Length: 224
Image (cartoon, rainbow, N blue to C red; front, side, top):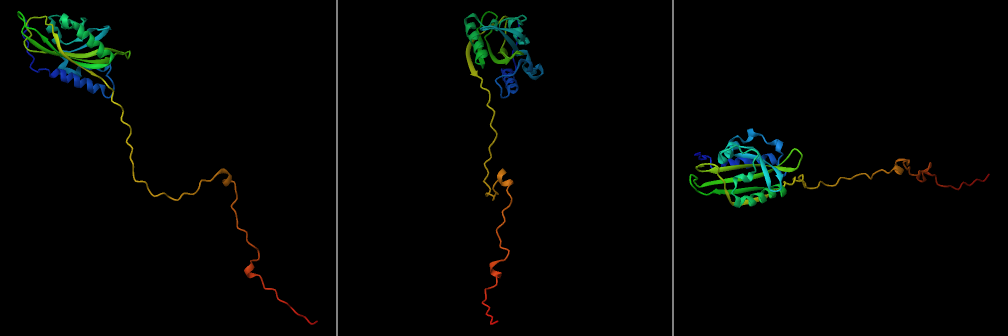
């Protein structure tokens, strides 16, 4: 029997969500190759990566120790629905498809009912899509955190609530347009056309003997 109490509450969920958002930036989602375990050290034991292998079916490829403690065995290679009771497995399968296809992120609230050697257990799960190395949306980064005494394993959960959030890539902001006060229009010379460029400058006509200097006519009388 495993007696385990989480002293961090659901903080690992928030840490993993913040890490995914930071990697995503203004894209729809990060790539699987970008996930670095050193970036999620505080949430590593609760984290997992699943691969889509069929509609509504996702298999655990990587799983933290907390998930193995819940099942009482190594869980890599198992379907994610193994942690869910038969009554809620269809709901999780539909949720997985929506996360892959929309794409979207999803938060789920879970509850494991009390029984012999099984104290009531609350848990939360988060699902966030990733692109594979081939560029398709076939991976999910997630976390499963339970709070309280675990009791004997395996522990399976009912889905009591889920919140799906479609992802929208942030549109790139257009460059800022600065509207300054227009400066006074400067006097510009008219553009020179090719015809004008080949034209010789015109010279005003000027008489060789200006009128104002011309002598007046005089009548000369001669008696010779």
